[in-house]
Amino acid sequence: MFTTRSTHRAAVCAALLSLLMACGGGGSGGSTQSAGVGTLRVALTDAPSCGYDAVHVTIDKIRVHQSASAGDNDAGWNDLPVAPSRRINLLDLSNGVLEELGQTQLPAGHYTQMRLLLAANGASAPFANAVQPSGGDEVELTTPSAQQSGLKLNLDLDVGANQIADVVLDFDACKSVVRRGNSGHYNLKPVIAVIPRVISVGTIEGFVDPSLAAAARVSAQSAGNPVKATAPDAVTGKFVLYPVPVGTYALVLTHPTRVTAAVLGVPVVASAAPTVVGAASAPLLPPSAASAPRAVTGTVSTTPQASASVRAMQSIASTPVEVAFTNADDINGAFALTLPVSAPVWVNYAPTPTPFAFTVDAAAAGLYTLQAASGSVTKSQLIDTKAVVPPLLFTFP
Image 1: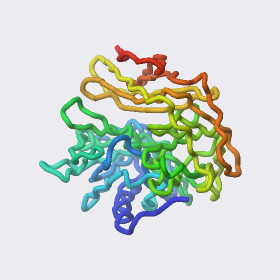
Image 2 (image 1 turned 90 degrees about the horizontal axis):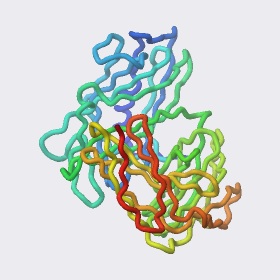
Image 3 (image 1 turned 180 degrees about the vertical axis):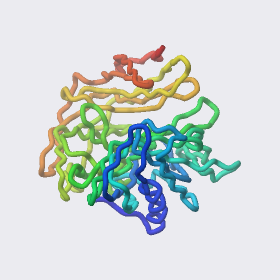
Image 4 (image 1 turned 30 degrees about the vertical axis):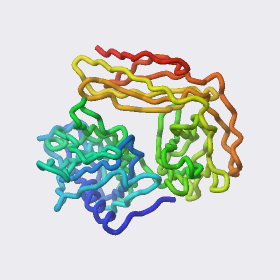
């Protein structure tokens, strides 16, 4: 159902687990603690990256607290340094690959806050925290807050006495790296989900036609929100989405030269057996796009300038799906997306893999809702890519 990396990689992430898990109890300001000892077991994974060959982070220390409101200097923090610090390429962890980080005992209770403290970058490459744009050189990844108070993760995790709390940290590098104007520099603003597993999650796996695999992206979406995404294996086209919470999903396939394709009503159950969507003999192969994709550009203006993101939503067979996502530039708010003009296609899920008989949704051709988000506020604009789209402006007070 998933793959484990080499012994070296396991050792790297085992050290990270020690950080993640040696959570002590204690508490201040509303923390809670139950009598007894439980076990926390953690693995690490990542979604596919957008335009990067590598995203490295180096973990120095983790701080854990049972109070979500605990400040840096409050009592009740448990600190665990990593010695030596470990440098991890997050992009090694995609397409169902998990790093099993191990397990540790800790006081039973409800854990609500985790902070990852990253090592400071040196004066030259290889930097402790770095990003390598596709085809380019490695550049420094700026993480000023992480070296002071740490990258904050909000948890909602019960560790019961004599029980195992089993979770996956899903680090979305694509949404976590933000360009800083024309400086050639990037900020790290992490998007990390904490996903319970064992009885509450399952797996979707299948095949994309190998001719498309190198540039394809597959995601499981619920109500237009990607829950898990990956790039297929570049040689075989096989994709694995794990862990995916139990439920029903739209499986969405995007590719630069193909129309968007959606497999609707894909069930995920808590089982060792995966939900299979497409086989090697019957892979996903959407039709070629009749028209070249359309570039859509614009600016997200905030006062003062703040982090923002933009995504393109499309309704396929009355099902909302996310077709593209980008972070706005952290300095000037600029963004750019490339969107299909040709009509998307869809098919209902069938439990027995057979060649896909897609239905064309002609009414959806070129029509998108662009959603810009800054903080907790979202603004939308309707566009039609069948014609040139003027530069867009989203303004946030």
